[in-house]
Image (cartoon, rainbow, N blue to C red):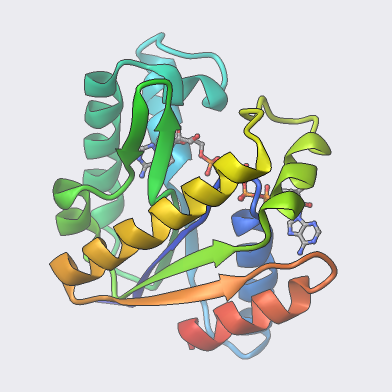
Length: 189
Ligand code: AP5
């Protein structure tokens, strides 16, 4: 069984950007990981079932439906045997409150060695969301983004207690993407 790393962070913090850059560094050294987007697994099933047309609609689905999609995604991803990095969420902000992204039944399937929490200042995240026309982002205030990041820290501590995994915080600040990618690569080596 390979290494299993879960990477999380609030929408727009730059998880996918950091993963792509970090994996480039590792590939140059001959270290390979398969990058898996948890939301894409959920989305494909949701589209097949006629529930959504774009991925930003998923967090507004009924909680029981989101849980079913989450469970199916975790079971499929958990079958991987090589080194994998799973791009997902500590919590999803739904209209009815935060939904845990890695509840016990998801953690059991993924069984991560490490959870990476990508963070940056809330005003930088706000600007990144405003400047990303490809997505229908929630228009949270800087204070709400701060609250979401704090909630995610609490959740990752709980996930560490359940699984025994480590939790690494990686800062992805404006103009410092290279540093974030290097920090991430150091965890994956
Ligand atoms: P997903 O697609 O993962 O949604 P997301 O959080 O919106 O992720 P993105 O990939 O769009 O954002 P990102 O943080 O990776 O930022 P990016 O690199 O694009 O998930 C979709 C949905 O699936 C979720 O909403 C949820 O409904 C569901 N889901 C997923 N996991 C789930 C789970 N476990 N349980 C239940 N539901 C789940 O960067 C953003 C912008 O910032 C870009 O423009 C980029 O250029 C810029 N940027 C990045 N880094 C920097 C930097 N250092 N300096 C300047 N700009 C930067």
